[in-house]
Amino acid sequence: TKNTKFKTKVEYEKNIKKQLLKDKKVKAASAEKQEIFSQILEESKIKKYPDKELKAAYNSMISTYKELAKKNDTSYENYLKNNLGMDKATFEKQANTAAKNTVRQELVLHALAEKYKIKITDSEYNDYLDKLLKDAGYTRSQYEKASGMKIEKYAEQNNLFDTMLYERVMDKVLKDSIAK
Image 1 (spheres, rainbow, N blue to C red):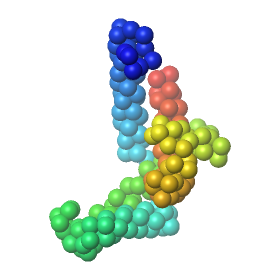
Image 2 (image 1 turned 30 degrees about the vertical axis):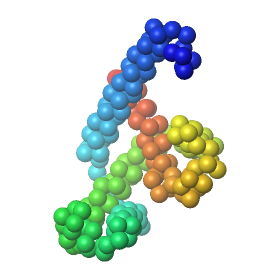
Image 3 (image 1 turned 45 degrees about the horizontal axis):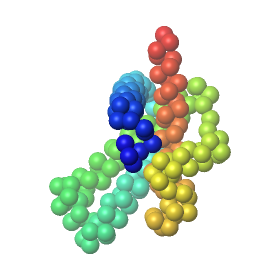
């Protein structure tokens, strides 16, 4: 307790228990959201997949593995064979399926957002990115210096907008399912 903000050991232990309980509740809610979202995905019918989004998701996966191969100083084909145990044709077939699943999730997520009239403003999104940085112990400039990219680029590459949207939408879906 000497190096903490707590005056007594009991106070410190009480805070730890409170934090663990909070973490447990967050994990339980997260698992429940994932389960509900999976059910919604399963029951959703997609009339037509947009070609542009499918291509983008597919190309993103392929370029990720090509970059990994480059970083590991090997060819794309060798990287796939040695790390995933598959040839290029098999991997690219799986990447195609994965791209379809990604786009499916995005379409369903955005349809739910529209149904619940959930919109995220630029200001809210920037606050979300700032909070993520703060939680990781960075300012925007520290992050840029450490990673070599702006947080917005990282956020775009990792689809953090949809992550934020997912949380908002699933909070609403969860609230609705409990209310019924």
